[in-house]
Image (cartoon, rainbow, N blue to C red; front, side, top):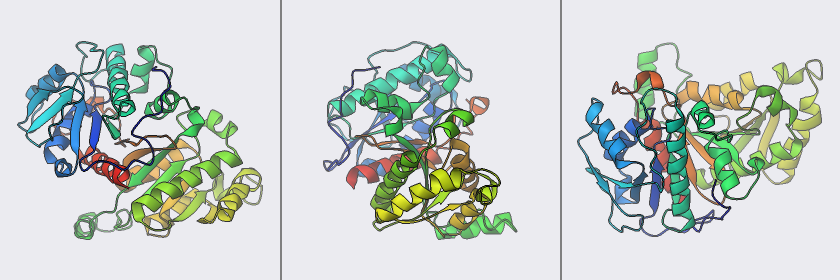
Length: 371
């Protein structure tokens, strides 16, 4: 873990004409390198930003040669301060300070976990030096991290600690970008009766707790934690939507606790948090039972939701659009986005990994930098 340094390219960034986005592959044993390479060739962000991949260039070249369907691009090592623009046909690669060596693909390993951390360290260092304006990350595997001796649960907590902040200073947010209307119509025709599962509007979900066991998450649920998550969600949605968002806070228990019959967290913790958010001037409603809340939100009733724990927010967003969703870290003095999927070891090397989430993560990172 590096010494705590607040990045030079931090929260209220006013970027140069072409800000630099540092992209990591996450665990190189997973599909991260594949979606990074595919997204690099497909994104239109090159005209508005300078992209850099922080990785082992030899690893990328090996993946490029061995996975069917990847684009015909060159892998070009560059120095951290190289000024050249990026382009779809040549992947510009900055080597981490620590190159771990060969990583067995499609399997959990200490080498994979350590490689992911080494790339994240280097990307973070670039932001501290003002050489990058945002970090975009591929998927990690938590067990690989632990095999490598790292107790941090994931990117979110690693970055919080690197900035000298407690884990609670950061919030996980999943953002489902708006879906073009013509694609929605086509999807509805393909799905027949299942016409409520795809929407044209965007939806953001922030989590009041982080990567932790369910009992641990519930034990530390607090009024302040929900309020902070709600304030962070409101700030980023306002930046994305250019207007005040309409938000809701999910209940914890079935049926919202049924007036205390199924638990008192709604009355004791969640309702007071909603009241504080309302007093802060936010358009916020709740607590609302999660099973009906996400249905209402999927139909455009809300722009954002505060979920109480990881799966309460992740499952509905991934059902609504897993491959379009973006993971955004809130509350830190830097911009970080990520894919919303995992390492997918089962499809590594098959050429079937979908780069849509990486494409969206790159686009959203640039939007946040330019805000």
